[in-house]
Each structure stands twice: as C-alpha cells, then as structure tokens.
Image 1 (cartoon, rainbow, N blue to C red):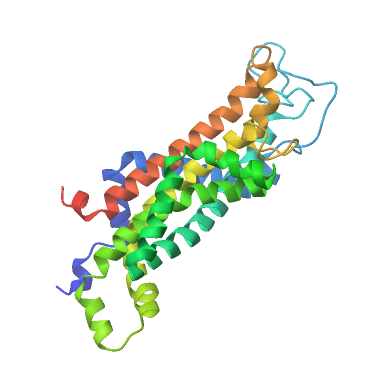
Image 2 (cartoon, one colour):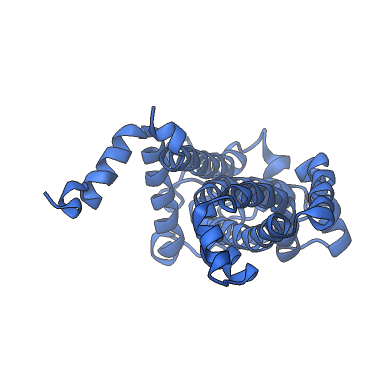
Amino acid sequence: MTPAAALPSLPARVRRWSADNKGASVGVVIIAALVAMAVFADVLAPHPPYLQDRDAILIPPVWQEGGDWRFLLGTDAVGRDMLSRVIYGSRFSLAIGCLVVSLAIAMGVTLGLIAAATRGIVDTAIMRFLDMVMAIPSLLLALVIVAILGPGLFNAVLAIAIVLVPHFTRITRAAALTELTRDYVVASRMAGAGGASIMFRQVLPNCMPPVIVQATLGFSTAILDTAALGFLGMGARPPTPEWGAMLADAQEFILLAWWVVTLPGIAILLAVLAFNLLGDGLRDALDPKLRKR
C-alpha cells in the first residue's frame, strides 16, 4: 500500500472531525447560515432594512396577537421590519469580524515574529507594553480608543483590532520561539538564508495553527465588542442595521415590545456561540497533545 493510499480521504477526515467535534459541527452550521444570510440578504429579506411604515409601528411577531403576516418578526418603533434588519445585520457583523481579525493578525503576528527574532531589549519592550495593554479590560480600552478617535463604525473596528493584538502577538511569539529551535531553522541559517526569510517563509507557516484558533475565537470577541460599542453609542450609528445599534435603539421599549430587543440579542448570542464552538473544535483538531488523547 502506498503512503497516499494509506491516508484517509478528505471527506473521510471531515466526517471523522465532525463525529469527534459535534459542538464544532453545530458552530459550522450556524456560521454557514449566517454567511448565507449575509450573501443573500437582498433575496431573503422581505423588506428594505431602512424602509419605514408609519402605519405599522411596534407590530408584534406574527404568532402573537396583533401580528401581521407582512412582518413575520414584527416591526420596530419607526415601522421597520425586524426580520429584514436582523438579516442585513449579519452582513455588518461578519464584515466587522473579518476586518477586525485581519487587522489584529497583521499587527499581532508581525510584532510576535519581531519579538521572537530579536529577543533582548526589543522583545522585552514589546512584551511589557502588551502586558500593560492586556491589564486594561478590553471593552474599557476599546471605549477609550474610540473616545479619542471619535465615534463611528470604522473607529470601533480599529479599536477592537488594537485590543486583540496582544493575544496574537503572545501566541505567535511563543510558537516562533519553539520553531526557532528546530533543525530546519539551523539548516537554513547554515545555508545562508536571511533572518527575515527564515521568519516569514519557514517559521510563520508552522506558527499558524494556534493563530487560526485564536482568530476564530477573536471573531466572536469582535462581534460581541462591536455590538457592545454600538449599544453604548460608540460604534455603528442609527439607522445602520447593526445588531448592537439595534439594541441601543430598542432599549427604551424593552418592556413594551420585547421582540425589538430579543431578536438582535439572539442573533449576537448565536454568532458568538458558533465561533466559540468552532474555535474549540479547531483547537482540539490542531493541537497535537489533544489529538493523541
């Protein structure tokens, strides 16, 4: 039997991973549904997210007395369809998560590789500064950054990315320090490879598994923190159909119309839960110590 034939096929490996990580499989299904909502929002949403119907203010969901089949999940305080706004909100949440994680990875991985490669005073300066950053509660630090830069969705994204940078830096540095002791690094140095080439072409690819896991968990943090900033009025501005901003608009109606608060809250809950479940599953799959159990 050839080595290629001995290896299980990709579908078989996927089925085995799904069987071993049922929680992660649930997370994948929820994330796939969110992605489908975001991509096909124009088709799935029954109404434009900004359309106001002054004759349909605070209509309850269709299964409740007074509901209207035109608005399956009810309307908000200005007559906008809740189902449409929740669907379009998935676009903002996924886009924000992708942008935040991309920025955090770019900054954090670069700093981690620099710290691992230089060591000495540069390494100490980077890590002690990041320790101070991590000592501040993440949401409080994001609020301070947004307060300095000014309220707005892009500034909120940048603030959350900065908050996540220390996590990626520490993980990358730890993995890079381990890889720098490997024989292939010694061989590359003896062959005359430069430091930058070794770090980015050889060490970095081997540091990616823990970074990927952290990126998945960071995605849920980005969604949650963006929603929190939006709720506090420091993120997306009305009438943007972003889940946190929707919660902020609806807080005064929490006792009068439960659906305007509950629906975006459930959307945030499901999104954060899905990415956390996927992150746990990826950690179990990519960590050699856990694979041996």
